[in-house]
Image (tube, rainbow, N blue to C red):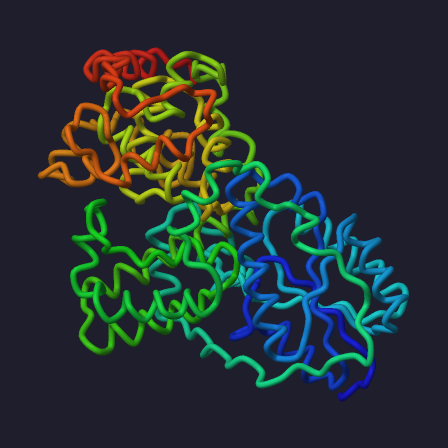
Amino acid sequence: MSDTSPTILWLRRDLRLADHPALLAAVKRGGPVIPVFIRDHSVDSLGAAPKWRLGLSLADLAKRLEDMGSQLIFRSGEAMAVLEQLISETGATAVHWSRLYDPDAIARDTLIKGALKQCGVEAESFAGHVLFEPWTVETKTGGFYRVYSPMWRAVRDRTVPEPQAAPSKLPTPESWPETETLDQWAMGAAMKRGAPVCLPHQRVGEEAARDRLDWFIANSIPPYKDDRNMPALDATSGMSENLTYGEISPRQCWHAGQRALDEGGGRGAEHWLKELVWREFAYHLVYHTPEILAGNWKSDWDAFPWNEDEDHPEVVVWKQGRTGEPFVDAAMREMYVTGKMHNRARMIVASYLTKHLMTHWKIGMRWFEDCLTDWDIAANAMGWQWTAGSGPDAAPYFRIFNPETQAEKFDPDGTYRRRWIAEGHENPTKTALSYFDAVPVSWRLSPSASYSDRIVELSEGRNRALQAYEARTF
């Protein structure tokens, strides 16, 4: 039914115009659409890199809306209070938003929806951040999937609706409510001198996301299954950054992969679709077992003797990328320069921290939360616990990645390591030198210094982890 009163479109992790059910439903109501982004606690509590990258995405969307004759309203405060104020100011009779699936967001949104409806305001949430909403995928016995492979088999042939085109125009109000500015918010303040180093490595916004997806499908799908593990190659989609902020939808990615599969993409296309479902698996686990975000998914790991000292010397040099393990250090430095880290490298650095250094996965998870521009609440938690052994679908704890043999296999000519490590090289690469421009001055690091000695011998670290595993009391 058409309605001429305004609709507030509350944007969160859906910063795009295409394939946006909440936006399209707002347009369909017939009245003005008022897009708003609220800087509440969930935004203020973000780590340095994801908060900065979110600001870039908001700036891009604001410009796209401006080009359509619309506007993005910025407000800060507790979400319910902000929405109530905007409803009072604009006469809006509806609020639309895209659903999120972590426990804090669910609790907030449930309270807001109930309060708005009680006041006679239409409050409606829409899918948009996942392919299959968590309550729609069940095992034969009616529960949720705790293991990835059967979940993949359950959903791989499901029909996924075609992505919807962006509206050609947005109805606008006669007058816009007041707005704060991104400059006032200073979203990148905590990045300090790292921001200009990291900026060239970001693909910001909806247009950049679509261009990258098109390039990936055209160039990298056939060899993807094999090449995706080679960190020196540009062989992955790079969509994690854009999916994180909703600059592209999972449905857009899924259908691009399906087209590639139908057109002869073979194993590469199918494996990329599996990676999209791996992301789904993470969100389903967060929805059904929210404890995965803060504690061991397998509670019997609570007694495992991990180091939990953030300031332990081994933890400090791991954070700095100075462990003396070139593959580990290269990966950490890639993260400081680009805000991202190759997936194979993520497994190596996580295994090294939790097993060779016997350090709690929470320390690594929190560090990634501060440093990754593609930080994702579900993928980060599940990835760390999967590697540590305390999570779902985990390999046996005694499978410990050896950074040296992993480098020989996946970086055989050392290109990736040389790309990110300057010390010990007569003519270090520009990217390797960029690390020293990105990290805090207080670290007092120099490319002319000698490369670090190993902080732990690999055999020693492996044996220490295996002994702890064998002596476990759970």
